[in-house]
Length: 290
Image (tube, rainbow, N blue to C red; front, side, top):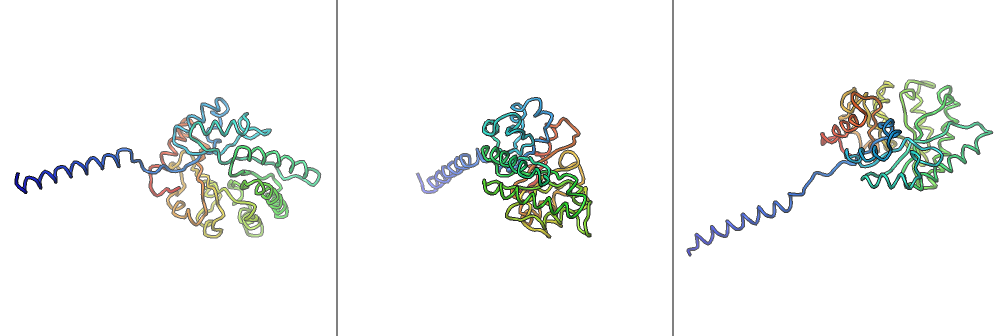
């Protein structure tokens, strides 16, 4: 056998080896999945009917964690903290956060309200969550700057209690925090300035900021690193409304966002279908980075 034939055979076998290695390396390759969460208020009616079945469907969609909206009397959707956490984990979901809260108490009810918070925080700690968010204020927070300052003192006190148990405490906005103004400054700006950053963070609802006539990116620039959480929301399913997600995600680092949570409040389809369309929208674009 001459050298030329030997050389061709060597090249042939080397080619086979390369093809085999490529098959081994790339046959199971998948792009890294995005760590996207869902606020379970998005499927509130389904959760009322079938908690276990709905959690299974949410996990099958590709969501990676949940934020609860069903805390009552120490339980989540009628289950103990550990039971609900385990249900989530069995379906490939982490239970990371929750919406819960109490109106600001008067002096006579301060101790009673703080005792409720102790119970609430202990239940969330038992579940291993990373945050508790209160998504409302009562009228006292909107009627006067003095009332808002009292509310923020209350929130800072709650945040201190949460921090002692290793949990972040935060506030979720709607549009009224931007349309209500004291001394030329929207309520939301006052809240950011009155909140102790060591005790309280903010969960920005991107849709409601726009409905209040403001731009989320302006807040990221003015108050950088203050928005640990985003509620990623549109008028209905993501991508069907007015929210400019491209420009918002481009400013993600500036905002301080660590967890992005889909919330769908209104629908063109059945809620579960709308939630699936929303996560598909986020997964479809490489610029939406989590």
